[in-house]
Length: 347
Image (cartoon, rainbow, N blue to C red; front, side, top):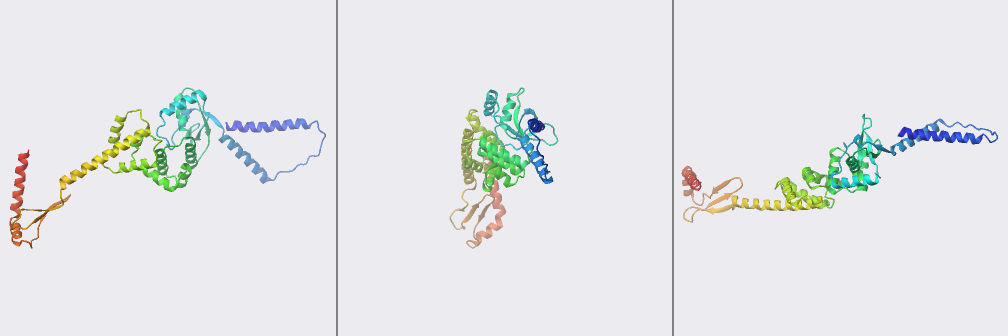
Protein backbone atom coordinates (compact mmCIF):
# COMPACT_ATOMS: atom_id res chain seq x y z
CA UNK A 1 0.00 0.00 0.00
CA UNK A 2 2.89 2.37 0.84
CA UNK A 3 4.63 1.81 -2.51
CA UNK A 4 1.34 2.39 -4.35
CA UNK A 5 0.77 5.69 -2.59
CA UNK A 6 4.32 6.80 -3.33
CA UNK A 7 3.96 5.83 -7.01
CA UNK A 8 0.69 7.76 -7.25
CA UNK A 9 2.32 10.86 -5.80
CA UNK A 10 5.18 10.70 -8.26
CA UNK A 11 2.81 10.03 -11.23
CA UNK A 12 0.78 13.08 -10.29
CA UNK A 13 3.94 15.20 -10.26
CA UNK A 14 4.98 13.87 -13.67
CA UNK A 15 1.51 14.48 -15.18
CA UNK A 16 1.48 18.01 -13.81
CA UNK A 17 4.92 18.67 -15.28
CA UNK A 18 3.85 17.28 -18.67
CA UNK A 19 0.69 19.40 -18.73
CA UNK A 20 2.71 22.48 -17.88
CA UNK A 21 5.11 21.70 -20.76
CA UNK A 22 2.25 21.43 -23.29
CA UNK A 23 0.73 24.72 -22.25
CA UNK A 24 4.09 26.50 -22.43
CA UNK A 25 4.66 25.48 -26.11
CA UNK A 26 2.28 28.23 -27.28
CA UNK A 27 4.22 30.98 -25.50
CA UNK A 28 7.16 32.92 -27.00
CA UNK A 29 10.62 31.85 -25.94
CA UNK A 30 12.00 33.48 -22.80
CA UNK A 31 15.33 33.36 -21.08
CA UNK A 32 15.83 30.45 -18.78
CA UNK A 33 17.72 31.03 -15.57
CA UNK A 34 19.13 27.87 -14.08
CA UNK A 35 19.74 27.95 -10.35
CA UNK A 36 21.41 24.92 -8.79
CA UNK A 37 19.88 23.94 -5.49
CA UNK A 38 22.45 23.73 -2.71
CA UNK A 39 23.45 20.19 -1.86
CA UNK A 40 22.14 20.51 1.70
CA UNK A 41 18.81 21.78 0.36
CA UNK A 42 18.48 18.77 -1.92
CA UNK A 43 19.22 16.44 0.97
CA UNK A 44 16.65 18.19 3.18
CA UNK A 45 14.00 18.09 0.45
CA UNK A 46 14.59 14.38 -0.16
CA UNK A 47 14.45 13.73 3.56
CA UNK A 48 11.20 15.65 3.93
CA UNK A 49 9.65 13.79 0.99
CA UNK A 50 10.69 10.47 2.50
CA UNK A 51 9.30 11.45 5.91
CA UNK A 52 6.06 12.59 4.31
CA UNK A 53 5.65 9.32 2.44
CA UNK A 54 6.35 7.36 5.64
CA UNK A 55 3.79 9.41 7.57
CA UNK A 56 1.24 8.87 4.82
CA UNK A 57 1.90 5.14 4.79
CA UNK A 58 1.73 4.95 8.61
CA UNK A 59 -1.70 6.58 8.67
CA UNK A 60 -3.20 4.71 5.72
CA UNK A 61 -6.06 2.38 6.61
CA UNK A 62 -5.56 -1.15 5.31
CA UNK A 63 -7.83 -4.18 5.16
CA UNK A 64 -6.20 -7.08 6.99
CA UNK A 65 -7.10 -10.69 7.56
CA UNK A 66 -8.04 -10.94 11.29
CA UNK A 67 -6.08 -14.20 11.52
CA UNK A 68 -2.89 -12.30 10.69
CA UNK A 69 -3.15 -10.32 13.95
CA UNK A 70 -1.97 -11.82 17.23
CA UNK A 71 -2.65 -10.59 20.75
CA UNK A 72 0.77 -10.99 22.33
CA UNK A 73 0.73 -7.52 23.83
CA UNK A 74 -0.38 -6.37 27.26
CA UNK A 75 -3.91 -7.32 28.20
CA UNK A 76 -6.04 -4.37 29.29
CA UNK A 77 -9.52 -5.94 29.45
CA UNK A 78 -11.04 -8.65 31.64
CA UNK A 79 -14.10 -9.74 29.67
CA UNK A 80 -13.21 -9.46 25.99
CA UNK A 81 -15.70 -12.28 25.26
CA UNK A 82 -18.66 -10.61 26.95
CA UNK A 83 -22.11 -9.85 25.54
CA UNK A 84 -20.77 -6.45 24.48
CA UNK A 85 -18.63 -8.15 21.83
CA UNK A 86 -21.70 -9.74 20.26
CA UNK A 87 -23.44 -6.37 20.20
CA UNK A 88 -20.37 -4.77 18.62
CA UNK A 89 -20.19 -7.54 16.03
CA UNK A 90 -23.83 -6.97 15.10
CA UNK A 91 -23.19 -3.23 14.74
CA UNK A 92 -20.17 -3.82 12.48
CA UNK A 93 -22.13 -6.35 10.43
CA UNK A 94 -24.93 -3.83 9.83
CA UNK A 95 -23.06 -0.51 9.62
CA UNK A 96 -19.44 -1.41 8.99
CA UNK A 97 -16.30 -0.76 11.03
CA UNK A 98 -15.94 3.00 11.48
CA UNK A 99 -12.81 3.11 13.67
CA UNK A 100 -9.69 1.17 12.62
CA UNK A 101 -7.52 -0.80 15.00
CA UNK A 102 -3.81 -0.08 15.40
CA UNK A 103 -1.29 -2.85 14.78
CA UNK A 104 2.45 -3.06 14.43
CA UNK A 105 4.41 -5.52 12.26
CA UNK A 106 5.89 -8.54 14.01
CA UNK A 107 9.65 -8.68 13.51
CA UNK A 108 10.91 -11.33 11.09
CA UNK A 109 7.36 -12.39 10.17
CA UNK A 110 5.87 -11.36 6.84
CA UNK A 111 2.28 -10.10 6.94
CA UNK A 112 1.95 -10.83 10.65
CA UNK A 113 0.98 -8.13 13.13
CA UNK A 114 0.54 -7.48 16.84
CA UNK A 115 -2.52 -5.63 18.10
CA UNK A 116 -1.73 -2.35 19.85
CA UNK A 117 -5.28 -1.24 20.50
CA UNK A 118 -8.73 -2.27 19.32
CA UNK A 119 -8.95 -5.72 20.92
CA UNK A 120 -12.74 -5.52 21.21
CA UNK A 121 -13.11 -4.62 17.54
CA UNK A 122 -10.77 -7.46 16.58
CA UNK A 123 -12.79 -9.92 18.68
CA UNK A 124 -16.02 -8.67 17.07
CA UNK A 125 -14.70 -9.08 13.51
CA UNK A 126 -13.45 -12.57 14.34
CA UNK A 127 -16.89 -13.38 15.71
CA UNK A 128 -18.46 -12.33 12.39
CA UNK A 129 -16.12 -14.70 10.55
CA UNK A 130 -16.33 -15.51 6.86
CA UNK A 131 -14.32 -13.28 4.55
CA UNK A 132 -14.67 -10.28 6.86
CA UNK A 133 -11.51 -8.19 6.99
CA UNK A 134 -10.58 -5.68 9.66
CA UNK A 135 -9.63 -2.07 8.98
CA UNK A 136 -6.26 -1.36 10.54
CA UNK A 137 -3.49 1.19 10.66
CA UNK A 138 -0.10 -0.53 10.44
CA UNK A 139 2.65 1.36 12.19
CA UNK A 140 6.12 0.36 13.36
CA UNK A 141 6.33 1.31 17.04
CA UNK A 142 8.63 0.82 19.99
CA UNK A 143 7.24 -1.01 23.02
CA UNK A 144 7.02 2.25 24.98
CA UNK A 145 5.09 4.04 22.23
CA UNK A 146 2.74 1.07 21.81
CA UNK A 147 1.92 1.06 25.53
CA UNK A 148 1.20 4.80 25.54
CA UNK A 149 -1.02 4.51 22.45
CA UNK A 150 -2.89 1.58 23.98
CA UNK A 151 -3.51 3.45 27.23
CA UNK A 152 -4.63 6.65 25.51
CA UNK A 153 -7.05 4.86 23.18
CA UNK A 154 -8.61 2.95 26.06
CA UNK A 155 -9.15 6.10 28.10
CA UNK A 156 -10.71 7.92 25.14
CA UNK A 157 -13.01 5.22 23.74
CA UNK A 158 -14.12 3.18 26.77
CA UNK A 159 -12.93 3.99 30.26
CA UNK A 160 -11.39 0.86 31.78
CA UNK A 161 -12.72 -0.06 35.20
CA UNK A 162 -10.59 0.53 38.27
CA UNK A 163 -9.60 -3.12 38.58
CA UNK A 164 -8.76 -3.34 34.86
CA UNK A 165 -6.55 -0.29 35.24
CA UNK A 166 -4.92 -1.89 38.29
CA UNK A 167 -4.19 -5.12 36.41
CA UNK A 168 -2.81 -3.19 33.42
CA UNK A 169 -0.58 -1.11 35.70
CA UNK A 170 0.73 -4.19 37.51
CA UNK A 171 1.46 -5.86 34.17
CA UNK A 172 3.38 -2.81 32.96
CA UNK A 173 5.37 -2.81 36.20
CA UNK A 174 6.07 -6.55 35.82
CA UNK A 175 7.34 -5.91 32.28
CA UNK A 176 9.73 -3.32 33.80
CA UNK A 177 8.29 -0.28 32.03
CA UNK A 178 9.50 2.89 33.77
CA UNK A 179 7.05 4.91 35.84
CA UNK A 180 7.19 7.76 33.31
CA UNK A 181 5.77 5.51 30.57
CA UNK A 182 3.05 4.13 32.89
CA UNK A 183 2.11 7.65 33.99
CA UNK A 184 1.83 8.78 30.36
CA UNK A 185 -0.15 5.72 29.27
CA UNK A 186 -2.72 5.85 32.09
CA UNK A 187 -2.67 9.58 32.86
CA UNK A 188 -1.90 8.98 36.55
CA UNK A 189 0.80 10.06 39.01
CA UNK A 190 3.37 7.95 40.87
CA UNK A 191 1.23 7.76 44.00
CA UNK A 192 -1.69 6.35 42.00
CA UNK A 193 0.59 3.77 40.38
CA UNK A 194 1.56 2.38 43.80
CA UNK A 195 -2.09 2.13 44.87
CA UNK A 196 -3.13 0.39 41.65
CA UNK A 197 -0.30 -2.12 41.81
CA UNK A 198 -1.03 -2.99 45.46
CA UNK A 199 -4.68 -3.77 44.71
CA UNK A 200 -3.70 -6.02 41.81
CA UNK A 201 -1.13 -7.83 43.95
CA UNK A 202 -3.39 -8.27 47.01
CA UNK A 203 -6.36 -9.83 45.19
CA UNK A 204 -5.90 -13.21 43.45
CA UNK A 205 -6.36 -12.95 39.69
CA UNK A 206 -8.70 -15.95 39.83
CA UNK A 207 -11.01 -14.01 42.13
CA UNK A 208 -10.95 -10.95 39.87
CA UNK A 209 -11.86 -13.09 36.85
CA UNK A 210 -14.81 -14.53 38.80
CA UNK A 211 -16.13 -11.03 39.52
CA UNK A 212 -15.37 -9.26 36.23
CA UNK A 213 -14.52 -5.62 35.43
CA UNK A 214 -17.15 -4.09 37.75
CA UNK A 215 -17.23 -0.69 36.04
CA UNK A 216 -19.35 0.83 38.82
CA UNK A 217 -16.84 -0.02 41.55
CA UNK A 218 -14.14 2.53 42.38
CA UNK A 219 -10.88 2.56 44.30
CA UNK A 220 -12.14 2.58 47.90
CA UNK A 221 -14.36 -0.55 47.65
CA UNK A 222 -11.60 -2.45 45.86
CA UNK A 223 -9.07 -1.36 48.49
CA UNK A 224 -11.37 -2.54 51.29
CA UNK A 225 -11.91 -5.78 49.37
CA UNK A 226 -8.15 -6.28 49.15
CA UNK A 227 -7.75 -5.72 52.89
CA UNK A 228 -10.32 -8.43 53.57
CA UNK A 229 -8.53 -10.82 51.22
CA UNK A 230 -5.10 -10.40 52.81
CA UNK A 231 -6.48 -10.87 56.33
CA UNK A 232 -6.01 -14.60 55.72
CA UNK A 233 -8.93 -15.59 57.94
CA UNK A 234 -10.99 -17.46 55.34
CA UNK A 235 -10.63 -19.22 52.00
CA UNK A 236 -11.65 -16.29 49.78
CA UNK A 237 -12.06 -18.39 46.62
CA UNK A 238 -14.40 -20.82 48.38
CA UNK A 239 -16.43 -17.95 49.86
CA UNK A 240 -16.72 -16.28 46.44
CA UNK A 241 -17.73 -19.49 44.66
CA UNK A 242 -20.45 -20.17 47.24
CA UNK A 243 -21.74 -16.58 47.08
CA UNK A 244 -21.84 -16.47 43.27
CA UNK A 245 -23.61 -19.83 43.12
CA UNK A 246 -26.42 -18.32 45.19
CA UNK A 247 -26.47 -15.09 43.18
CA UNK A 248 -27.00 -16.63 39.75
CA UNK A 249 -25.59 -15.90 36.30
CA UNK A 250 -27.75 -12.91 35.36
CA UNK A 251 -26.06 -10.48 37.75
CA UNK A 252 -23.73 -7.79 36.40
CA UNK A 253 -20.08 -7.79 37.38
CA UNK A 254 -20.68 -4.81 39.70
CA UNK A 255 -23.45 -6.77 41.43
CA UNK A 256 -21.13 -9.76 41.71
CA UNK A 257 -18.52 -7.58 43.39
CA UNK A 258 -20.98 -6.22 45.95
CA UNK A 259 -22.35 -9.68 46.73
CA UNK A 260 -18.93 -11.29 47.13
CA UNK A 261 -17.68 -8.29 49.13
CA UNK A 262 -20.51 -8.64 51.64
CA UNK A 263 -20.18 -12.43 51.80
CA UNK A 264 -16.46 -12.11 52.44
CA UNK A 265 -17.02 -9.56 55.20
CA UNK A 266 -19.58 -11.79 56.93
CA UNK A 267 -17.37 -14.86 56.65
CA UNK A 268 -14.42 -13.03 58.18
CA UNK A 269 -16.55 -11.64 61.01
CA UNK A 270 -17.85 -15.14 61.77
CA UNK A 271 -14.32 -16.57 61.71
CA UNK A 272 -13.12 -13.85 64.08
CA UNK A 273 -15.92 -14.63 66.54
CA UNK A 274 -15.14 -18.35 66.41
CA UNK A 275 -11.45 -17.73 67.00
CA UNK A 276 -12.17 -15.45 69.96
CA UNK A 277 -14.47 -18.06 71.52
CA UNK A 278 -11.89 -20.80 70.98
CA UNK A 279 -9.15 -18.70 72.56
CA UNK A 280 -11.32 -18.04 75.59
CA UNK A 281 -12.27 -21.72 75.89
CA UNK A 282 -8.75 -23.09 75.54
CA UNK A 283 -6.72 -20.60 77.47
CA UNK A 284 -9.22 -19.31 80.05
CA UNK A 285 -7.96 -16.79 82.57
CA UNK A 286 -4.27 -16.10 82.28
CA UNK A 287 -3.75 -16.18 86.06
CA UNK A 288 -5.67 -17.38 89.11
CA UNK A 289 -5.13 -18.82 92.60
CA UNK A 290 -5.81 -22.54 93.12
CA UNK A 291 -5.99 -24.84 96.12
CA UNK A 292 -8.10 -24.89 99.27
CA UNK A 293 -7.77 -22.27 101.93
CA UNK A 294 -5.85 -23.61 104.90
CA UNK A 295 -2.36 -23.99 106.26
CA UNK A 296 -0.86 -24.50 102.83
CA UNK A 297 0.26 -21.55 100.66
CA UNK A 298 -1.85 -20.14 97.83
CA UNK A 299 -0.69 -21.53 94.47
CA UNK A 300 -0.78 -19.39 91.34
CA UNK A 301 -1.86 -21.10 88.11
CA UNK A 302 -0.93 -19.50 84.78
CA UNK A 303 -2.28 -20.60 81.39
CA UNK A 304 -0.64 -19.33 78.23
CA UNK A 305 -0.78 -20.32 74.57
CA UNK A 306 2.36 -22.43 74.80
CA UNK A 307 2.70 -23.43 78.47
CA UNK A 308 0.98 -23.99 81.82
CA UNK A 309 2.68 -23.23 85.13
CA UNK A 310 1.97 -23.69 88.84
CA UNK A 311 3.97 -21.66 91.33
CA UNK A 312 4.03 -20.22 94.84
CA UNK A 313 6.42 -18.27 97.01
CA UNK A 314 8.55 -20.65 99.09
CA UNK A 315 8.96 -17.90 101.64
CA UNK A 316 5.23 -18.12 102.38
CA UNK A 317 5.58 -21.74 103.57
CA UNK A 318 9.08 -23.28 103.40
CA UNK A 319 7.87 -26.59 104.81
CA UNK A 320 5.34 -27.08 102.00
CA UNK A 321 8.00 -26.23 99.47
CA UNK A 322 10.37 -28.83 100.88
CA UNK A 323 7.62 -31.48 100.93
CA UNK A 324 6.61 -30.77 97.32
CA UNK A 325 10.21 -30.94 96.19
CA UNK A 326 10.57 -34.40 97.79
CA UNK A 327 7.26 -35.74 96.45
CA UNK A 328 6.92 -33.98 93.06
CA UNK A 329 7.24 -37.24 91.08
CA UNK A 330 4.47 -38.91 93.11
CA UNK A 331 2.20 -35.85 92.86
CA UNK A 332 2.58 -35.63 89.09
CA UNK A 333 2.10 -39.40 88.69
CA UNK A 334 -1.12 -39.20 90.70
CA UNK A 335 -2.36 -36.36 88.45
CA UNK A 336 -1.54 -38.33 85.29
CA UNK A 337 -3.26 -41.47 86.61
CA UNK A 338 -6.38 -39.50 87.48
CA UNK A 339 -6.43 -37.94 84.01
CA UNK A 340 -6.18 -41.37 82.38
CA UNK A 341 -9.02 -42.80 84.49
CA UNK A 342 -11.31 -39.88 83.64
CA UNK A 343 -10.38 -40.06 79.96
CA UNK A 344 -11.34 -43.76 79.82
CA UNK A 345 -14.70 -43.04 81.44
CA UNK A 346 -15.42 -40.32 78.84
CA UNK A 347 -14.63 -42.75 76.02
